[in-house]
Image (cartoon, rainbow, N blue to C red; front, side, top):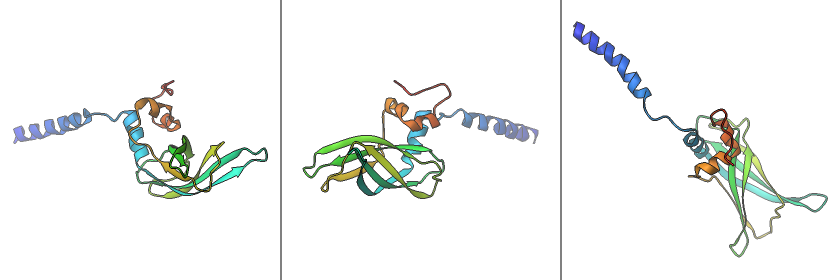
Length: 154
C-alpha cells in the first residue's frame, strides 16, 4: 500500500511538470491565432470628398470575434478592382476593435484616404492568413502580444 501511495505521489508531481514542458506558443503564433479568430464582412462603401477635393474611401465592415480573447486593433487588406478586373488598390488598413467582445459582432469602419470609388468598382476586405513574421511584427496589433522591449521590425 505504501508503494502505491508513493507511486501516486510521484505521478502527481511529475505529470504536471511534464505537461508544463510542452511547446510554448510564440507571440507570433498567438497573434496569428487571435487574428484568425475574426470574421470580416464588408457591409457597404462610399467615397467621401473633403472640401479641398481629396477623396476618402469609407467601408463599413461587420466584424465578428469567434475566439475567446479580444484584440483592440485588427489589420485587414482592402482591395479595389476596376470593371476591367484590374486591381486599382491593395492596401492594409487597421480597424479599431476597442470594446468588441469575443462572441459579439459589431460594425466598424475602414478608411482609405486618397481613394475614390468608381461606380463599377468591386471591393473586398480580407483578413490575411499566414503572414510572414516580418509583416506580423509591423502590424499595430503586434504591440498587444509582443514581449516587453520588442518593437516592430524595421
